[in-house]
Length: 195
Image (cartoon, rainbow, N blue to C red):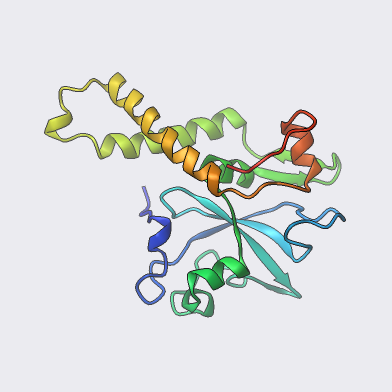
């Protein structure tokens, strides 16, 4: 498994460790004014975070924030040298955890005029679950855990992860003006957040 970092640890040491980005193809602006306007044209999944999250990225002519479309942000580059507040203003974070992984798995299909999953949802869920279960088991394999069964460790992991999921839910941005998401996932008169 590649090295992962807590979100708050990025850029701490003169721009190191930098975020590693996976660009996700989608259409964010559909002609309606959104919370972020029409300048954002990509999701980028920060995939070397302990719990992945998505930043929105700007387009400025042929330039692409935050790092010209590169997958690694240069530790000595201008984005890395900005304050956390400035980075979040330039490329806002909108989703954490499984919701970020789920959104990164979507692409917009021009023929269907709808979002389509790149990989089967059950596979995405299983990969996400197995990754975090492995991290949990690896950190709970010492002698003091030797009398706890694997089944109990898995139950403990689920209870622990529930708190993480709730904290992500509180941080997420409502998808206020994106009817494709709302129609796909919700009944009328419900609001939606990316969690």
